[in-house]
Length: 403
Image (cartoon, rainbow, N blue to C red; front, side, top):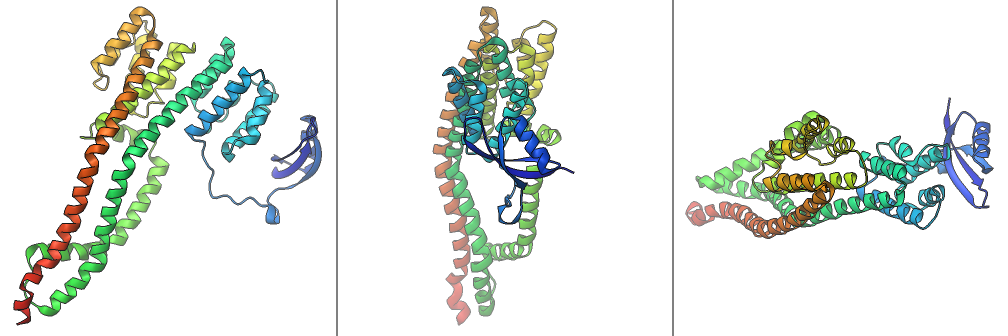
């Protein structure tokens, strides 16, 4: 039975290294390290006593991690460093432990004779298909450094886009959460005090006050049930939120939302145009590029449209014709792609579309922020102010009740 061993070795350059590996015995570990060109110094079972690693779940590899890694590896390859040397350096210095583990496995695979793209493909959790295909195109065409730079630029643009949206939505979300917390706090702790005081005084409460008191009782009764249900929903969503059946239902609704629907549509179109343009400009075959892009837009609606495009292209037709049959693609996008097909520069046209939509997303998020901020402040004032008025309405007749 294989168990995990921790080891310390010295490499051919005289540097000390540490790591972990699964094997059946310490002797098997030592033999494996010697075969890799290392001098074993210490081998012992991992997880013994205070040396045990305590983890609370695996940290995933983010888009930002991949962008930094792609940029660094491209720079090293362009500077003349060998691929193995670059992977060795990056596997030691990257901050994300999960990416460090993945790069260590990639380095071992490349040492065993595999190509870099096939080594990436073995770890689908850490390396997306876009990175795998771009790397393969760079290897075949002899421009790996250029391909990795394009990957880095694409990932950096995606990170920048997400950061803009997150920054624009932070304030409204914080204000909304504050309003919810304040309302729940008043219903749980303040309204019951006034309710007891009104009950001692006797008399009939105004209708708004009776509604508020009834709402307070409902929250006290259903609050724990709602919290448990909310936690259960979040757990379920983390496990099944990306399932095809769930996305088939949710994604069309996201694009039809009154305020945020156009924003979600522009984001999906940005990803579609940028990723497809990058793949085509790197020499990835059109059918393979469409297969990859269909899963990178983040929208099932556009994914179905891309599948229609692939079927059309496979039979020798154009790209733009099937896009015109889907409402999610504006006429401007269809016409620009058609123009690119006529001129033989579809990739360049797609990149222009992506650049235009990136600017549109930025403008839309700024406009939404400017619109939502005063609305959220007004919402907070109306909710909290309305509750205070409901509580103090019986005070107008308190003297009559005392007499």
